[in-house]
Length: 254
Image 1 (cartoon, one colour):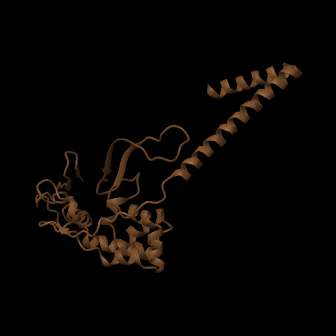
Image 2 (cartoon, rainbow, N blue to C red; image 1 turned 45 degrees about the vertical axis):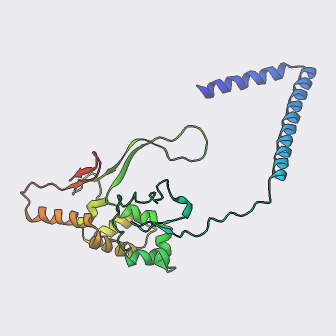
Image 3 (cartoon, helix red, strand yellow; image 1 turned 180 degrees about the vertical axis):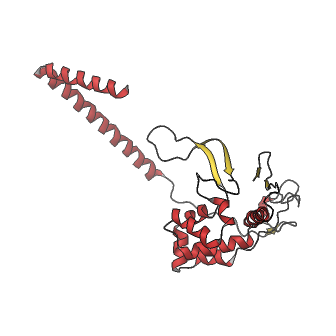
């Protein structure tokens, strides 16, 4: 509908210009040129104003030094500046007097350290395609209603509503290829071959090492394989595997 209206408008404009006299054409072009000159003058004025503001900006600014963070929380050993004391002469912005206790993070596996810090062929490939490796080895897919904003502005990834992590059944059906957590019940070589089909930029050697690492340290990989072995050894038993989360919707069953 909009394109039709635009075409009709352009047609009427061409017909009007075809019927106008030399004086009318001269007046129309003079008005257009005057509007262009006014627009350029305003642009120059705005630029001149911006230049004056920049030239008047203060340049002699003294450096402010907060000093060293010498104060330490008695509970979690977080560092503070002296002036961060509260009205009770305590530092409570970190753990609220020991009320918040977080478990220590596990040590990063040596394989990931090497891939993230080295400059070898495998490390460079991993760093350049880290998102492909992450998606290929993931246990769940993301589900969301993506709504791109209208107009021609810069790219924006906008999601409407709830975000879900979708976990597929333990076994795929004939319509879909195995993927995500389902691949961890396969032999490692077959699983990696399937992953590399969709990620040709990834190196087979890196994918094999990451798969072996996850099968060793990741509890979900072990759970998938254990569930598969249980069903294979007891095909008539009705079993279910459930992953519990922390929120009301944070659970999934297989």
